[in-house]
Image 1 (tube, rainbow, N blue to C red):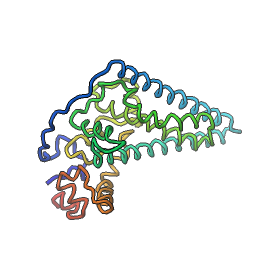
Image 2 (tube, rainbow, N blue to C red):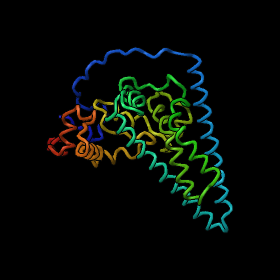
Image 3 (cartoon, helix red, strand yellow):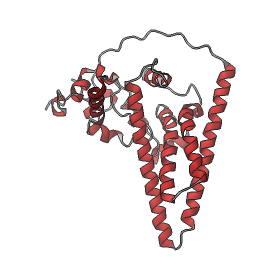
Image 4 (cartoon, one colour):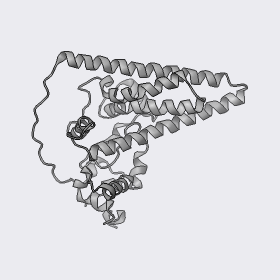
Length: 275
């Protein structure tokens, strides 16, 4: 009986899930070099806009801290800024998990508005590598959504602590797909390795726990810090039960009967652990 969502076991120790039906190959969209080039250029421009806006906002926050009267005030404000940034990054990690869980489990490629991204995320389980495009293209959807708020933070920088939280949340949201990409690389760039060691970006070991059928846990992809807590508290199963109660929809994770049984309260964690 499957117990992986209840433990910190590595993917190698997880029981084998039922074989997934073989997917039929689908016709591929006609490749257009000019279209691909335009898409890559737009992605770089949007990403550069986020970097520029984030840099300006960070500089203004630092200037506010530096201009605070007295050393004690500077230290206190600086500590508050760091704490606020940490909170913002954690909020981005949690938000990335909610989005990832939802897009993995409920829509399909025919769902209006999100069908394309749902197909991309769900097919990613079978083809995990993300380096067939540039990192700018990986982060482009989030960058497009966040460049406006980041620009607003740069122009109208509020109190340094509030600005730091906002900047960390928006920046973390943009980082999510880059972090996701790097977690699938055996030798990521030096910048990625530094961010992983600092706990800002997700490690390969953390994300690997998501990539085992039925892909029912470890959805957070900014730094993955929320993942152990959400698994330990059965958070995703509670969310799935709530959605099922309200809409009748069953998530893809329920293709594993043990996941559904746990979500619906038909078994307990202790029973799944064999105690």
